Length: 243
Image (tube, rainbow, N blue to C red; front, side, top):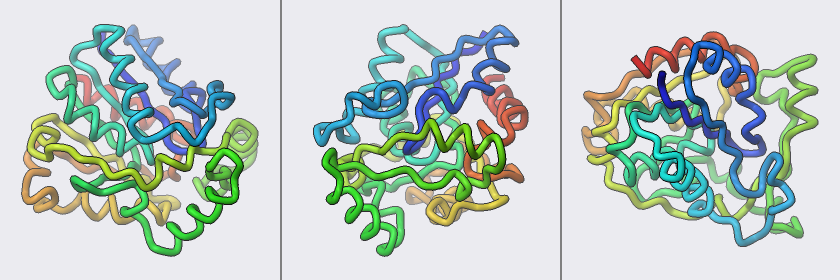
């Protein structure tokens, strides 16, 4: 039995992992699909007080409270920031860190600094116009979702806490690099805001050469939400990381 902790990206909640969670549990594994503060079924907690540290603590406290060891930690999109922080602080508890089409930061970077200036300006303007300082969710079509999947994700998305966006993340790249890592790149269609992180994940000199040797790069021919659009393929990757 493996211990899986699944962390969603912006606008989502633990609900987005339902198909992956069910498949892993059917094979006898222990699965925790976290919902970050202010999102999903915890959207009633949305406030300007929520920061990147709030979300990091959501995951740290779960792993500690459940006394989990040998964790396969899968982080999607924005949650690449969170997974990197968790690997820095709980490296001995992690068996594998899986970046699912996720933000891959450098030490001292914020989520916003991994994106273009145009995207930064757009999101900051939206956040500042919001009473709760949050970003409204996009149409799930940008994630490559169609038909029933697009409708399902669209009705469940919630605004994302805006004060997570510009907070810098300090971490020890050598410590994170000691954890085996897999970057799952979703290419059809490829979400433009993740492209800088895809390039980094293919660069052996990333983190001043620390990215290798415990890292691998794999591609899925699907959009940005593979837990929705290609759950079986993503489950195969996760099971490979638990072996």
